[in-house]
Length: 512
Ligand code: ATP
Image 1 (cartoon, rainbow, N blue to C red):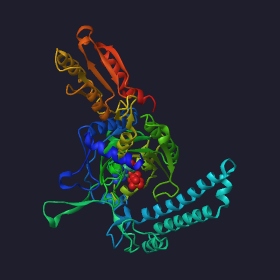
Image 2: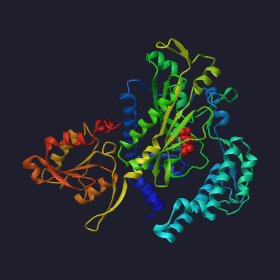
Image 3: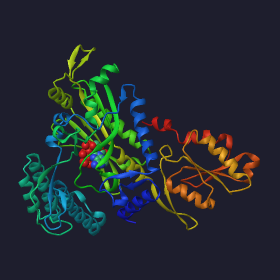
Image 4: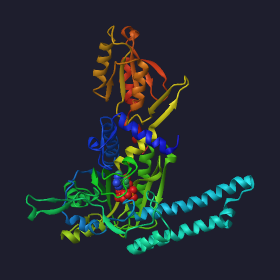
Protein backbone atom coordinates (compact mmCIF):
# COMPACT_ATOMS: atom_id res chain seq x y z
CA UNK A 1 0.00 0.00 0.00
CA UNK A 2 1.38 3.46 -0.89
CA UNK A 3 1.60 6.16 1.78
CA UNK A 4 -1.22 7.99 0.01
CA UNK A 5 -3.52 4.95 0.18
CA UNK A 6 -2.59 4.42 3.81
CA UNK A 7 -3.43 8.03 4.59
CA UNK A 8 -6.83 7.66 2.90
CA UNK A 9 -7.60 4.50 4.87
CA UNK A 10 -6.71 6.06 8.18
CA UNK A 11 -8.93 9.07 7.46
CA UNK A 12 -11.82 6.73 6.63
CA UNK A 13 -11.11 4.76 9.82
CA UNK A 14 -11.17 7.96 11.90
CA UNK A 15 -14.68 8.61 10.66
CA UNK A 16 -15.95 5.05 10.88
CA UNK A 17 -14.99 4.69 14.54
CA UNK A 18 -16.01 8.14 15.81
CA UNK A 19 -12.65 9.86 16.07
CA UNK A 20 -13.02 12.67 13.53
CA UNK A 21 -15.90 13.87 11.36
CA UNK A 22 -15.95 16.50 8.64
CA UNK A 23 -17.65 19.60 10.05
CA UNK A 24 -21.23 20.21 8.82
CA UNK A 25 -21.09 16.99 6.83
CA UNK A 26 -24.83 16.79 6.10
CA UNK A 27 -24.48 20.18 4.38
CA UNK A 28 -21.59 18.81 2.28
CA UNK A 29 -18.97 19.90 4.79
CA UNK A 30 -16.97 23.02 5.53
CA UNK A 31 -13.49 22.94 4.09
CA UNK A 32 -10.61 22.43 6.55
CA UNK A 33 -12.88 22.38 9.60
CA UNK A 34 -13.35 19.16 11.56
CA UNK A 35 -15.31 17.84 14.53
CA UNK A 36 -13.93 15.38 17.05
CA UNK A 37 -16.23 12.46 17.77
CA UNK A 38 -16.83 10.49 20.93
CA UNK A 39 -13.45 8.72 20.84
CA UNK A 40 -11.52 11.55 19.24
CA UNK A 41 -12.36 13.92 22.06
CA UNK A 42 -11.09 11.40 24.64
CA UNK A 43 -7.77 11.01 22.84
CA UNK A 44 -7.50 14.76 22.41
CA UNK A 45 -8.23 15.38 26.09
CA UNK A 46 -5.56 12.87 27.08
CA UNK A 47 -2.99 14.64 24.90
CA UNK A 48 -4.00 17.95 26.46
CA UNK A 49 -3.59 16.51 29.92
CA UNK A 50 -0.17 15.11 29.02
CA UNK A 51 0.99 18.53 27.82
CA UNK A 52 -0.63 20.52 30.64
CA UNK A 53 0.70 18.34 33.43
CA UNK A 54 4.17 18.12 31.87
CA UNK A 55 4.29 21.92 31.61
CA UNK A 56 2.28 23.28 34.51
CA UNK A 57 2.31 20.58 37.16
CA UNK A 58 5.87 19.37 36.78
CA UNK A 59 7.47 22.80 36.47
CA UNK A 60 7.05 24.82 39.63
CA UNK A 61 7.84 28.02 37.75
CA UNK A 62 5.17 27.57 35.06
CA UNK A 63 1.51 28.42 35.56
CA UNK A 64 -1.43 28.03 33.21
CA UNK A 65 -4.17 30.46 32.13
CA UNK A 66 -7.17 30.48 29.82
CA UNK A 67 -7.72 33.74 27.95
CA UNK A 68 -10.56 34.86 25.68
CA UNK A 69 -10.57 34.32 21.94
CA UNK A 70 -11.79 37.89 21.36
CA UNK A 71 -9.26 40.55 22.24
CA UNK A 72 -8.88 44.28 21.76
CA UNK A 73 -8.19 44.89 18.04
CA UNK A 74 -5.12 47.01 18.85
CA UNK A 75 -3.40 43.85 20.13
CA UNK A 76 -3.17 42.57 16.56
CA UNK A 77 -1.72 45.86 15.37
CA UNK A 78 0.90 45.71 18.10
CA UNK A 79 1.76 42.09 17.38
CA UNK A 80 2.18 42.81 13.66
CA UNK A 81 -0.64 40.50 12.57
CA UNK A 82 -2.79 43.22 10.96
CA UNK A 83 0.12 44.43 8.84
CA UNK A 84 2.05 41.29 8.12
CA UNK A 85 0.22 38.03 8.86
CA UNK A 86 -0.16 37.40 5.15
CA UNK A 87 0.31 34.71 2.56
CA UNK A 88 1.00 35.64 -1.06
CA UNK A 89 -1.71 34.13 -3.23
CA UNK A 90 -2.15 33.68 -6.95
CA UNK A 91 -5.12 32.38 -8.99
CA UNK A 92 -5.11 30.37 -12.18
CA UNK A 93 -7.58 32.07 -14.54
CA UNK A 94 -8.57 28.85 -16.31
CA UNK A 95 -9.16 26.49 -13.40
CA UNK A 96 -10.14 29.35 -11.02
CA UNK A 97 -8.01 27.57 -8.40
CA UNK A 98 -6.15 29.59 -5.80
CA UNK A 99 -2.62 28.79 -4.67
CA UNK A 100 -0.02 30.13 -2.30
CA UNK A 101 2.67 31.57 -4.56
CA UNK A 102 5.46 30.50 -2.19
CA UNK A 103 4.07 26.93 -2.09
CA UNK A 104 4.02 26.73 -5.91
CA UNK A 105 7.68 27.79 -5.95
CA UNK A 106 8.67 25.47 -3.13
CA UNK A 107 7.03 22.53 -4.92
CA UNK A 108 8.97 23.49 -8.06
CA UNK A 109 12.25 23.57 -6.11
CA UNK A 110 11.43 20.16 -4.60
CA UNK A 111 10.86 18.76 -8.09
CA UNK A 112 14.26 20.01 -9.31
CA UNK A 113 15.95 18.48 -6.27
CA UNK A 114 14.10 15.23 -6.85
CA UNK A 115 15.41 15.13 -10.42
CA UNK A 116 18.97 15.42 -9.09
CA UNK A 117 18.32 12.64 -6.56
CA UNK A 118 16.91 10.38 -9.29
CA UNK A 119 20.07 10.95 -11.35
CA UNK A 120 22.17 9.91 -8.33
CA UNK A 121 20.04 6.77 -7.88
CA UNK A 122 20.60 5.92 -11.55
CA UNK A 123 24.37 6.33 -11.09
CA UNK A 124 24.28 4.08 -8.03
CA UNK A 125 22.59 1.32 -10.02
CA UNK A 126 24.98 1.68 -12.94
CA UNK A 127 28.27 1.73 -11.04
CA UNK A 128 27.38 -0.55 -8.10
CA UNK A 129 30.01 -0.80 -5.33
CA UNK A 130 32.43 1.46 -7.17
CA UNK A 131 29.96 4.38 -6.94
CA UNK A 132 31.31 7.52 -5.28
CA UNK A 133 28.28 9.70 -4.50
CA UNK A 134 30.25 12.80 -3.46
CA UNK A 135 32.24 12.81 -6.68
CA UNK A 136 29.15 12.04 -8.76
CA UNK A 137 27.24 14.96 -7.24
CA UNK A 138 30.23 17.26 -7.83
CA UNK A 139 30.70 16.34 -11.48
CA UNK A 140 27.55 14.97 -13.12
CA UNK A 141 26.21 17.74 -15.40
CA UNK A 142 22.51 16.83 -14.90
CA UNK A 143 22.83 16.87 -11.12
CA UNK A 144 24.79 20.11 -11.17
CA UNK A 145 22.30 21.80 -13.50
CA UNK A 146 19.22 20.84 -11.44
CA UNK A 147 20.78 21.76 -8.10
CA UNK A 148 22.03 25.08 -9.47
CA UNK A 149 18.56 25.82 -10.85
CA UNK A 150 16.91 24.89 -7.52
CA UNK A 151 19.30 27.15 -5.61
CA UNK A 152 18.74 30.00 -8.01
CA UNK A 153 14.94 29.74 -7.70
CA UNK A 154 15.18 29.54 -3.92
CA UNK A 155 17.39 32.63 -3.75
CA UNK A 156 15.11 34.62 -6.04
CA UNK A 157 12.04 33.46 -4.09
CA UNK A 158 13.49 34.50 -0.72
CA UNK A 159 14.68 37.79 -2.10
CA UNK A 160 11.40 38.74 -3.78
CA UNK A 161 9.29 37.67 -0.81
CA UNK A 162 11.52 39.52 1.65
CA UNK A 163 11.23 42.66 -0.43
CA UNK A 164 7.50 42.04 -0.77
CA UNK A 165 7.93 42.53 -4.52
CA UNK A 166 4.83 40.64 -5.63
CA UNK A 167 5.28 41.43 -9.34
CA UNK A 168 8.72 39.80 -9.17
CA UNK A 169 7.23 36.75 -7.40
CA UNK A 170 4.78 36.38 -10.28
CA UNK A 171 7.58 36.83 -12.83
CA UNK A 172 9.52 34.04 -11.12
CA UNK A 173 6.51 31.69 -11.40
CA UNK A 174 6.32 32.52 -15.10
CA UNK A 175 10.09 32.16 -15.63
CA UNK A 176 9.98 28.73 -13.98
CA UNK A 177 7.16 27.77 -16.39
CA UNK A 178 5.03 26.54 -13.49
CA UNK A 179 1.64 25.26 -14.65
CA UNK A 180 -1.59 24.88 -12.70
CA UNK A 181 -1.92 21.19 -11.71
CA UNK A 182 -5.65 21.29 -12.56
CA UNK A 183 -5.85 23.21 -15.86
CA UNK A 184 -2.27 22.67 -16.96
CA UNK A 185 -2.12 26.32 -18.06
CA UNK A 186 0.18 29.21 -17.19
CA UNK A 187 -2.61 31.75 -17.24
CA UNK A 188 -1.90 33.35 -13.83
CA UNK A 189 -3.38 36.43 -12.15
CA UNK A 190 -1.17 38.89 -10.30
CA UNK A 191 0.07 37.91 -6.81
CA UNK A 192 -1.77 39.51 -3.86
CA UNK A 193 -1.16 39.50 -0.15
CA UNK A 194 -3.95 37.80 1.76
CA UNK A 195 -4.38 38.34 5.50
CA UNK A 196 -4.99 35.10 7.36
CA UNK A 197 -7.03 36.55 10.22
CA UNK A 198 -10.79 36.09 10.38
CA UNK A 199 -12.65 39.21 11.40
CA UNK A 200 -16.09 39.90 12.79
CA UNK A 201 -17.88 42.78 14.47
CA UNK A 202 -18.54 43.49 18.10
CA UNK A 203 -21.30 45.88 19.04
CA UNK A 204 -25.10 45.84 18.95
CA UNK A 205 -25.66 48.21 16.03
CA UNK A 206 -23.61 48.31 12.90
CA UNK A 207 -22.72 52.02 13.17
CA UNK A 208 -20.77 51.65 16.37
CA UNK A 209 -19.49 48.16 15.65
CA UNK A 210 -15.80 47.54 16.03
CA UNK A 211 -13.96 45.10 13.83
CA UNK A 212 -12.41 42.43 15.98
CA UNK A 213 -10.43 39.36 15.05
CA UNK A 214 -10.59 35.73 15.97
CA UNK A 215 -7.14 35.14 17.46
CA UNK A 216 -4.69 33.49 15.04
CA UNK A 217 -2.52 32.32 17.97
CA UNK A 218 -3.01 31.96 21.72
CA UNK A 219 0.30 33.63 22.62
CA UNK A 220 -0.96 37.22 22.64
CA UNK A 221 -3.43 36.41 25.43
CA UNK A 222 -0.40 35.42 27.48
CA UNK A 223 1.65 38.53 26.65
CA UNK A 224 -1.09 40.97 27.57
CA UNK A 225 -1.60 39.17 30.90
CA UNK A 226 2.10 38.98 31.68
CA UNK A 227 2.01 41.50 34.54
CA UNK A 228 -1.32 40.25 35.92
CA UNK A 229 0.10 36.77 36.34
CA UNK A 230 3.55 37.90 37.46
CA UNK A 231 2.11 40.10 40.22
CA UNK A 232 -0.78 37.95 41.43
CA UNK A 233 1.27 34.76 41.27
CA UNK A 234 4.39 36.44 42.74
CA UNK A 235 6.36 34.92 39.89
CA UNK A 236 10.11 35.46 39.66
CA UNK A 237 12.02 35.40 36.42
CA UNK A 238 12.63 32.92 34.87
CA UNK A 239 9.02 31.75 34.75
CA UNK A 240 6.49 30.55 32.19
CA UNK A 241 2.80 30.95 31.36
CA UNK A 242 1.04 28.16 29.50
CA UNK A 243 -2.25 28.03 27.67
CA UNK A 244 -4.29 25.62 25.54
CA UNK A 245 -6.90 27.09 23.25
CA UNK A 246 -8.46 27.59 19.87
CA UNK A 247 -6.81 29.62 17.13
CA UNK A 248 -8.19 30.57 13.72
CA UNK A 249 -6.45 31.10 10.41
CA UNK A 250 -8.02 31.56 7.01
CA UNK A 251 -5.55 29.17 5.38
CA UNK A 252 -5.49 29.36 1.59
CA UNK A 253 -4.17 25.88 1.00
CA UNK A 254 -6.08 23.76 3.44
CA UNK A 255 -5.31 20.10 2.90
CA UNK A 256 -3.90 17.01 4.56
CA UNK A 257 -6.81 16.37 6.90
CA UNK A 258 -6.33 17.87 10.37
CA UNK A 259 -2.75 18.95 9.59
CA UNK A 260 -3.83 22.34 8.29
CA UNK A 261 -7.18 23.55 9.58
CA UNK A 262 -8.93 26.89 9.66
CA UNK A 263 -9.98 26.36 13.28
CA UNK A 264 -7.47 24.48 15.42
CA UNK A 265 -6.01 24.25 18.90
CA UNK A 266 -2.59 25.30 20.11
CA UNK A 267 -0.70 24.45 23.26
CA UNK A 268 1.65 27.35 23.88
CA UNK A 269 4.05 28.33 26.63
CA UNK A 270 5.86 31.64 26.90
CA UNK A 271 8.94 31.52 29.09
CA UNK A 272 10.08 34.90 30.40
CA UNK A 273 13.82 35.25 30.97
CA UNK A 274 16.55 37.82 31.62
CA UNK A 275 17.95 39.55 28.54
CA UNK A 276 21.07 37.76 27.24
CA UNK A 277 19.94 34.47 28.80
CA UNK A 278 17.46 33.68 26.06
CA UNK A 279 19.69 31.47 23.91
CA UNK A 280 20.50 29.24 26.88
CA UNK A 281 16.77 28.83 27.55
CA UNK A 282 16.02 28.37 23.87
CA UNK A 283 18.39 25.38 23.81
CA UNK A 284 16.87 24.08 27.05
CA UNK A 285 13.31 24.17 25.69
CA UNK A 286 14.30 22.68 22.35
CA UNK A 287 15.71 19.61 24.08
CA UNK A 288 12.95 19.39 26.71
CA UNK A 289 10.19 19.56 24.13
CA UNK A 290 11.82 16.91 21.97
CA UNK A 291 12.00 14.62 25.01
CA UNK A 292 8.28 15.24 25.67
CA UNK A 293 7.45 14.11 22.14
CA UNK A 294 9.75 11.10 22.19
CA UNK A 295 8.43 9.92 25.58
CA UNK A 296 5.11 9.07 23.90
CA UNK A 297 6.92 6.23 22.18
CA UNK A 298 5.89 6.85 18.57
CA UNK A 299 9.48 6.19 17.41
CA UNK A 300 12.55 8.38 17.98
CA UNK A 301 13.50 8.45 14.28
CA UNK A 302 10.21 10.12 13.41
CA UNK A 303 11.37 13.44 14.84
CA UNK A 304 13.95 15.92 13.63
CA UNK A 305 14.83 19.55 14.20
CA UNK A 306 14.66 22.11 11.45
CA UNK A 307 16.66 25.17 12.47
CA UNK A 308 15.48 28.36 10.79
CA UNK A 309 18.16 30.21 8.88
CA UNK A 310 15.87 33.00 7.83
CA UNK A 311 14.46 34.54 11.00
CA UNK A 312 11.39 36.70 11.51
CA UNK A 313 12.39 40.26 12.37
CA UNK A 314 11.55 39.79 16.07
CA UNK A 315 13.33 36.45 16.58
CA UNK A 316 16.99 35.77 17.27
CA UNK A 317 16.70 31.97 17.11
CA UNK A 318 13.98 29.59 15.89
CA UNK A 319 13.61 25.88 15.30
CA UNK A 320 10.80 23.52 14.39
CA UNK A 321 10.33 20.01 15.65
CA UNK A 322 9.28 18.12 12.54
CA UNK A 323 7.43 14.82 12.54
CA UNK A 324 7.29 12.18 9.85
CA UNK A 325 3.60 12.23 8.93
CA UNK A 326 2.30 9.84 6.22
CA UNK A 327 2.96 12.69 3.74
CA UNK A 328 6.54 13.32 4.90
CA UNK A 329 8.40 15.36 7.53
CA UNK A 330 6.40 18.48 8.48
CA UNK A 331 6.29 21.01 11.31
CA UNK A 332 4.71 19.82 14.52
CA UNK A 333 6.00 22.40 16.99
CA UNK A 334 7.80 25.72 16.80
CA UNK A 335 10.32 26.91 19.40
CA UNK A 336 11.15 30.58 19.06
CA UNK A 337 13.35 33.03 20.87
CA UNK A 338 11.18 36.14 20.39
CA UNK A 339 13.45 38.65 22.20
CA UNK A 340 11.50 41.43 23.97
CA UNK A 341 9.55 42.20 20.79
CA UNK A 342 6.00 41.37 21.92
CA UNK A 343 6.14 42.95 25.37
CA UNK A 344 7.86 46.08 23.97
CA UNK A 345 5.21 46.41 21.27
CA UNK A 346 2.41 46.12 23.84
CA UNK A 347 4.15 48.70 26.01
CA UNK A 348 4.29 51.02 23.00
CA UNK A 349 0.73 50.47 21.79
CA UNK A 350 -1.02 50.38 25.18
CA UNK A 351 1.08 53.04 26.86
CA UNK A 352 1.35 50.74 29.92
CA UNK A 353 4.72 49.70 31.34
CA UNK A 354 5.55 46.05 30.70
CA UNK A 355 8.67 46.01 32.84
CA UNK A 356 9.75 43.62 35.51
CA UNK A 357 11.73 44.59 38.57
CA UNK A 358 14.37 41.97 39.22
CA UNK A 359 15.04 41.79 42.97
CA UNK A 360 18.26 39.88 42.40
CA UNK A 361 19.90 42.39 40.09
CA UNK A 362 17.96 45.46 41.26
CA UNK A 363 17.15 46.26 37.64
CA UNK A 364 14.02 47.08 35.70
CA UNK A 365 13.75 45.49 32.29
CA UNK A 366 11.40 44.08 29.69
CA UNK A 367 11.89 40.31 29.84
CA UNK A 368 12.93 38.26 26.84
CA UNK A 369 10.68 35.42 25.75
CA UNK A 370 11.26 31.87 24.57
CA UNK A 371 8.07 30.31 23.24
CA UNK A 372 7.12 26.71 22.64
CA UNK A 373 4.08 26.33 20.39
CA UNK A 374 2.68 22.95 19.45
CA UNK A 375 -0.49 22.17 17.52
CA UNK A 376 -2.86 19.93 19.45
CA UNK A 377 -4.50 18.63 16.28
CA UNK A 378 -1.12 17.95 14.66
CA UNK A 379 -0.04 16.04 17.77
CA UNK A 380 -3.30 14.09 17.52
CA UNK A 381 -2.50 13.30 13.87
CA UNK A 382 1.05 12.24 14.80
CA UNK A 383 -0.24 9.88 17.51
CA UNK A 384 -3.14 8.55 15.50
CA UNK A 385 -1.29 8.03 12.20
CA UNK A 386 1.62 6.25 13.88
CA UNK A 387 -0.80 3.97 15.70
CA UNK A 388 -2.84 2.93 12.66
CA UNK A 389 -1.86 -0.54 11.54
CA UNK A 390 -3.33 -3.10 9.14
CA UNK A 391 -2.07 -6.53 10.18
CA UNK A 392 -2.19 -9.97 8.62
CA UNK A 393 -2.51 -12.59 11.35
CA UNK A 394 -1.00 -16.07 11.40
CA UNK A 395 -4.41 -17.66 10.80
CA UNK A 396 -4.74 -15.64 7.58
CA UNK A 397 -7.24 -13.15 9.02
CA UNK A 398 -6.67 -9.43 8.88
CA UNK A 399 -7.17 -6.88 11.60
CA UNK A 400 -6.99 -3.11 11.82
CA UNK A 401 -5.47 -2.10 15.12
CA UNK A 402 -4.67 1.26 16.62
CA UNK A 403 -1.49 0.74 18.60
CA UNK A 404 -2.03 3.89 20.63
CA UNK A 405 0.22 4.57 23.62
CA UNK A 406 -1.82 3.04 26.47
CA UNK A 407 -1.74 6.23 28.58
CA UNK A 408 -3.41 8.16 25.74
CA UNK A 409 -5.91 5.53 24.55
CA UNK A 410 -9.53 6.79 24.67
CA UNK A 411 -10.83 3.56 26.20
CA UNK A 412 -8.46 1.83 28.59
CA UNK A 413 -10.24 -1.49 28.91
CA UNK A 414 -13.23 -3.42 27.66
CA UNK A 415 -15.20 -5.72 29.95
CA UNK A 416 -16.59 -8.71 28.04
CA UNK A 417 -18.72 -11.53 29.45
CA UNK A 418 -18.02 -14.61 27.31
CA UNK A 419 -21.76 -15.33 26.97
CA UNK A 420 -24.91 -13.33 27.71
CA UNK A 421 -26.22 -15.80 30.31
CA UNK A 422 -25.35 -18.05 33.28
CA UNK A 423 -24.68 -15.05 35.54
CA UNK A 424 -21.62 -13.89 33.58
CA UNK A 425 -23.06 -10.45 32.66
CA UNK A 426 -23.76 -9.77 36.35
CA UNK A 427 -20.16 -10.49 37.33
CA UNK A 428 -18.90 -8.44 34.38
CA UNK A 429 -21.13 -5.51 35.37
CA UNK A 430 -19.74 -5.57 38.88
CA UNK A 431 -16.17 -5.43 37.57
CA UNK A 432 -17.12 -2.66 35.16
CA UNK A 433 -18.83 -0.58 37.86
CA UNK A 434 -15.74 -0.82 40.01
CA UNK A 435 -13.13 -0.10 37.33
CA UNK A 436 -15.00 2.79 35.72
CA UNK A 437 -14.24 4.82 38.84
CA UNK A 438 -10.61 4.85 37.70
CA UNK A 439 -10.57 4.23 33.96
CA UNK A 440 -12.60 4.90 30.86
CA UNK A 441 -14.14 1.43 30.25
CA UNK A 442 -16.53 -0.09 27.73
CA UNK A 443 -18.93 -2.94 28.40
CA UNK A 444 -19.78 -5.18 25.43
CA UNK A 445 -21.74 -8.44 25.37
CA UNK A 446 -22.90 -8.42 21.74
CA UNK A 447 -21.49 -10.81 19.05
CA UNK A 448 -18.74 -13.41 19.31
CA UNK A 449 -15.74 -12.74 21.50
CA UNK A 450 -13.52 -12.58 18.40
CA UNK A 451 -15.64 -9.83 16.87
CA UNK A 452 -15.62 -7.91 20.12
CA UNK A 453 -11.81 -8.12 20.30
CA UNK A 454 -11.58 -6.73 16.73
CA UNK A 455 -13.87 -3.81 17.62
CA UNK A 456 -11.64 -2.93 20.57
CA UNK A 457 -8.47 -3.33 18.46
CA UNK A 458 -9.91 -0.89 15.94
CA UNK A 459 -10.35 1.83 18.58
CA UNK A 460 -7.03 1.14 20.29
CA UNK A 461 -8.24 -0.29 23.62
CA UNK A 462 -5.10 -1.73 25.19
CA UNK A 463 -6.81 -4.35 27.42
CA UNK A 464 -9.80 -6.65 27.13
CA UNK A 465 -11.09 -8.44 30.21
CA UNK A 466 -13.09 -11.61 29.54
CA UNK A 467 -15.32 -13.18 32.16
CA UNK A 468 -16.02 -16.90 31.63
CA UNK A 469 -17.70 -19.72 33.58
CA UNK A 470 -14.56 -20.46 35.51
CA UNK A 471 -14.54 -16.83 36.74
CA UNK A 472 -17.65 -17.70 38.82
CA UNK A 473 -15.58 -20.20 40.73
CA UNK A 474 -12.05 -18.81 40.93
CA UNK A 475 -12.77 -15.06 40.80
CA UNK A 476 -10.21 -14.69 38.03
CA UNK A 477 -10.53 -13.31 34.49
CA UNK A 478 -8.58 -13.40 31.23
CA UNK A 479 -6.78 -10.24 30.25
CA UNK A 480 -5.92 -9.90 26.55
CA UNK A 481 -3.25 -7.50 25.37
CA UNK A 482 -4.04 -5.54 22.20
CA UNK A 483 -0.64 -5.49 20.48
CA UNK A 484 0.57 -9.03 21.16
CA UNK A 485 -2.92 -10.57 21.48
CA UNK A 486 -1.46 -12.63 24.33
CA UNK A 487 -3.81 -13.69 27.09
CA UNK A 488 -3.21 -14.12 30.79
CA UNK A 489 -5.34 -15.30 33.69
CA UNK A 490 -5.40 -12.92 36.64
CA UNK A 491 -7.39 -12.53 39.87
CA UNK A 492 -10.10 -9.85 39.73
CA UNK A 493 -8.59 -8.27 42.83
CA UNK A 494 -5.35 -7.52 40.93
CA UNK A 495 -6.97 -5.94 37.87
CA UNK A 496 -6.90 -2.36 39.00
CA UNK A 497 -3.24 -2.33 39.98
CA UNK A 498 -2.13 -4.08 36.80
CA UNK A 499 -3.99 -1.68 34.53
CA UNK A 500 -3.04 1.38 36.55
CA UNK A 501 0.61 0.50 36.14
CA UNK A 502 0.26 0.14 32.38
CA UNK A 503 -1.68 3.36 31.71
CA UNK A 504 0.20 5.53 34.18
CA UNK A 505 1.27 9.04 33.15
CA UNK A 506 3.94 8.86 35.82
CA UNK A 507 6.14 6.46 33.86
CA UNK A 508 5.99 8.74 30.84
CA UNK A 509 6.77 11.84 32.91
CA UNK A 510 9.86 10.12 34.27
CA UNK A 511 11.29 10.05 30.73
CA UNK A 512 10.96 13.79 30.09
P1 ATP B 1 2.94 26.27 9.06
O1 ATP B 1 4.28 26.76 8.55
O2 ATP B 1 2.76 24.78 8.98
O3 ATP B 1 1.78 27.06 8.52
P2 ATP B 1 3.38 28.02 11.25
O4 ATP B 1 4.86 28.14 11.25
O5 ATP B 1 2.55 29.11 10.68
O6 ATP B 1 2.95 26.60 10.61
P3 ATP B 1 3.13 28.63 14.02
O7 ATP B 1 2.55 29.97 13.77
O8 ATP B 1 4.53 28.52 14.50
O9 ATP B 1 2.91 27.72 12.72
O10 ATP B 1 2.13 27.87 15.00
C1 ATP B 1 2.58 26.93 15.96
C2 ATP B 1 1.97 25.56 15.77
O11 ATP B 1 0.56 25.64 15.59
C3 ATP B 1 2.48 24.84 14.53
O12 ATP B 1 3.70 24.20 14.78
C4 ATP B 1 1.36 23.85 14.26
O13 ATP B 1 1.52 22.67 15.05
C5 ATP B 1 0.13 24.59 14.73
N1 ATP B 1 -0.60 25.14 13.58
C6 ATP B 1 -0.34 26.28 12.92
N2 ATP B 1 -1.21 26.47 11.92
C7 ATP B 1 -2.06 25.40 11.95
C8 ATP B 1 -3.20 25.02 11.18
N3 ATP B 1 -3.65 25.77 10.19
N4 ATP B 1 -3.82 23.85 11.49
C9 ATP B 1 -3.38 23.08 12.50
N5 ATP B 1 -2.33 23.40 13.27
C10 ATP B 1 -1.67 24.54 13.01
